[in-house]
Image (cartoon, rainbow, N blue to C red):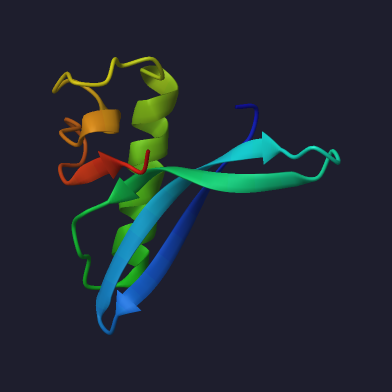
Length: 89
């Protein structure tokens, strides 16, 4: 994954969550983004969700290869920076 993005959504009014997106190149060379981490914690504002997403991205960049099934990385949902994050896979 060469490019990443943070997306914030409000699926329920007043509850904001972030997703970390990774780039995926399609069969025709079209670049798209797929979620690989989803926030399970509802934030009260979009700004709070953006900040949590930025912290989650920073954590992922520092420890990108945390193995699934361990509690020490973002991928399984117990980041030391932000609890409540789960893999979208």
